[in-house]
Amino acid sequence: MDFNEVIGQGEVIARLTNMVAEGRLPHALLFCGPEGCGKMAVAMAFASFLLTRDESHRVNAEAMLRKWQHPDLLFSYPVIRPSGTNAEHKMESDDFAKEWNSLIMEGPYFSMDQWLDRMGAANQQAQMGVGESNSLIRKLSLKSSQGGYKVSIVWLPERMNLECANKLLKLLEEPPTMTVFLLVCEHPEQLLDTILSRTQRIDFKKIAQEEVERALAEQRGIDSDMAHRIARVANGNWLKALDELDTGNENRQFFDMFKMLMRLAYQRNAKELKRWSEAVYGYGREKQKRMLSYFMRMVRENFMFNFQQPNLVYMTQEEEDFARNFARFINEKNVVEMNELFARVSRDIGQNANAKIEFFDMALKVVMLLLR
Image (cartoon, rainbow, N blue to C red; front, side, top):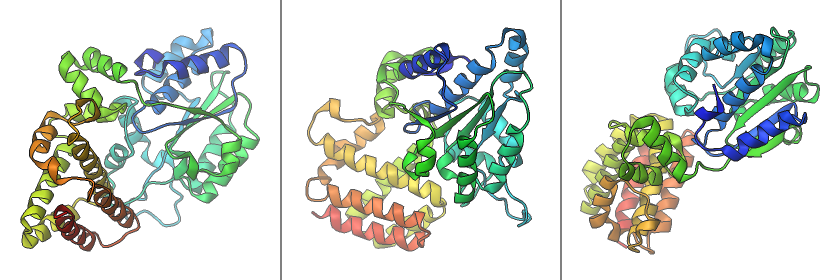
């Protein structure tokens, strides 16, 4: 994979290649930034860059990297424990190696939700346990097969449990020769301070809007007006831009549920609101939390729509059409409380609260808030 396959992030790429050229590449880098900004894409491109520097092995290395099966490139990532798995088995990345390879072969931009779906997760949370750290220690104890770097990409290290994190810490404290760790992280505040102190942090910005527009035009053949609108809604997140291109994307389902909730709440139709909450209950916790995040964005955007400043509004055409009649119901008397309500329910759902009760209670509270 080449750096030219990365969307934007030119400053980060230049910084990384300069480190190598000047002989000051640290043994552990921590890539931090929001979802969809291209952290993993840069990590995979940089790993390819390091593993193809040896002229004598370049052709062979490039062939292996095209299939992401280079023996000196190690991926660690959170996994689930499938039902029926022996309790004595320590889960590790290799348990889902086939699914992981199929995902990254489709491209370097993907989300945890996509990964959970690929693993066939229901309500399970993915994490890295001691089985993963033991596997990594074992693999890194072997010499490089190509005589150059060994690169370990750890995707979402904040999902390591304490035992796994402590073993990774020991690797970072005494790294194997010619090994580079690339930790790709979205929530660095959840990492151990000792891990943070042993890595060099590189912060990624959201992708510039013009870079997203250019990629939509060049890679997807989108006309300039549509590319501009999608890029504004995506707000620097390439995954959101791709979602907008998908006619059956999840956000359209969430938009329908948002409209239904607001209309039923305005009508004070408790019976139908109960049916609405039961429908949402069937989504599963991760999807429920994504829906609530979408609801919070819709509340903010409808509030801003009232100011009639197009440059402040980030909505699709469909969302704007709905906002023309609905936005006046979101005002300074209820906007804060409504977003706080959605945020609280999302937090409670994440803490395993009864989703059916939570969503019906939330729907009834929306009735009261719309009266203000």
